[in-house]
Amino acid sequence: MNTAFAVVVGAGLLLIAVLVGQPLLVVRRRARLAGAAPGRRDRALLRRHLPQYRRLPAPLRRRLEQRIAVFLGEKEFVGCRGLTVTPSMRLLITAQACLLGLGRDQHGYDRLRAVLIYPAQFVVPERWEDEDGVVTEEERVLAGQAWDVSRILLSWADVRQAGGAEPYNVVIHEFAHYLDHEAGGDDGVPWLPSAAAREQWRTLLERELADLRAVIARGAEPWLDPYAAEDAGEFFAVASEAFFEQPRELAARHPQLYRGLAAGYGLDPAAW
Ligand SMILES: [Zn+2]
Image (cartoon, rainbow, N blue to C red; front, top):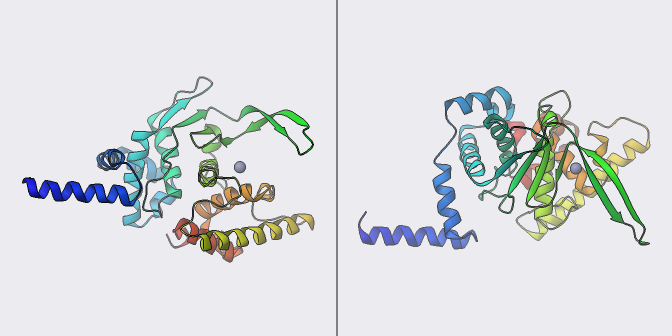
């Protein structure tokens, strides 16, 4: 490469890094990692176990493969309670996690450091204080938890239940919580490109949540997992599972919710 050309390329890379607000080193590392797309065996595994991968349009599938390579190169996977994490487990969890960010230009999950995998559901101690200062401590059994923005905990037995009759997907659920936390809270409003988009999503979310609670209060059985009625954060996580697991059903049953999620994620999985 001649010197002038190298300077132009270097300046271009730096400009991109500044524009997207990422250190140049990260941009370079990710460009290098993205080159190591999944090989034939990994692709076969993804096709066998991940219906979304089979359905993805080619350009999005290529993007997903690059994102997978970057995620695998950056994040640590830790087996808990004696679980040995295999390359297939890492690949399947990563592929589902990367689906959520596929509509964004940036890789995302910048602050995530590790995914902790338990063989089955696990117990975590919880402690909280109410408005009167009364402290409650209890143990909760969980299929997954977005602990904070650096760690996500998953039960492998639950990860394997995705793709069943119910729109259940613990990876999508916990990574949706992650996006919510990353945006600064657990109110079901993840990063969105503008204040107007956030406001629009918040209004829709509150209406859909109120509708769901009304269905449950009538004693009727909602299509969405009733756990979504807990609060806005859980509603967003559960609705995201339905959006990626059963997009056509969600679009038919809750068209406005589907359109809101499609706009937020920048994806249209019902068309895949
Ligand atoms: Zn949740």
